[in-house]
Image (cartoon, rainbow, N blue to C red; front, side):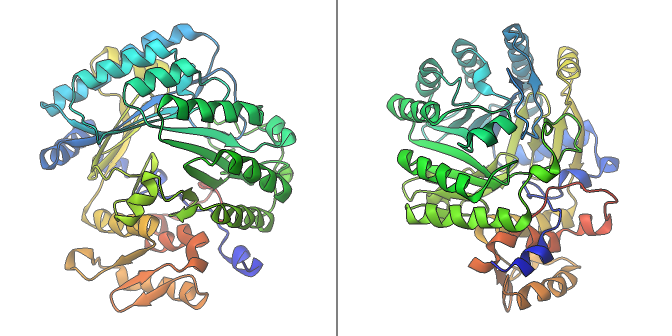
Length: 451
């Protein structure tokens, strides 16, 4: 890839797990009642939902992490937190008035396996008791290779979980020390093999490039070790350096310890080539899967979806997020829960759904959201149908002409596609459609760099 293109397009930009993105939500149009009405609207159209459960506790701080988490070694926090999550679920069920059909469940964190196996079992059994699901429901969780035990895997497998994603990041001892995430290859190997032995059919590894002190040789070593285990899918993504966000753990190293943009891109291109030679297919942005994995099948069937959980095989319009800081999505609106564990639990105890901010999408938002979703999932979009058109579309297309000249997009009469050369710049292409960001140019950096 040309270093000129990298320097030209390597700017701060969203990862587009939503549109509008969180910094551009309009709180003036949002209220708890407006959010509830948007969810009821979606639920009346289709009772199918995805369920995201945020389990925020970790025993130690990883300094690459930008997620909302609570560092503690006190496992007495487990039971009261589970009780709050179950009460929140009850509040949503009371509001919806009918049993939902669960199409997808994902346990995220934090560290979900911070929780004892028996506590996870209790939480999930109580959740499932009040909803419908079948053999097509996809259940998954994020696992830490150091503390995901065989008991965790057995309990979750018995409940129907078949997918786990392990955070690998990098196998270099120097990098692991810098990000405070020490986990030797043998731990990942053991966790991967135990998952397969326990009945998990999709094991994923998360690998990050652009970490402090990381080199191309580290990426080569990490991918070589990964190929020994052949996980079913791989998230191979750029480290998002956002130290200005309150509460994240990105400290303990300097900006000068991070590889530059050209180095990062060489890491990605090197890793991508190695993965493709091993039989992995690149999917959307920063993801790879074997042809036997459901993520690849979703691409083939054109059912790949993207939301706050990232890429998913479920295209449920509604996603309910339970737990502190969890984000919900009704398709017509977004809502985020309180970020403080204490405030979250206090509101739940008062019988209040604990959302504190959100956004209700207008008609223009909905049209643009569909375009960005298609670009992120299919690397193409079109405006053949009248409902795909919006007033500023001609101006958007003018903005994309320079990218066309650089070979990053290709136009047809009523649509555009992103060729292989443009894939690394998909975030930049989506930014051309992002009218809310263009209308409110930020004075400070809000997002990680795109390349």
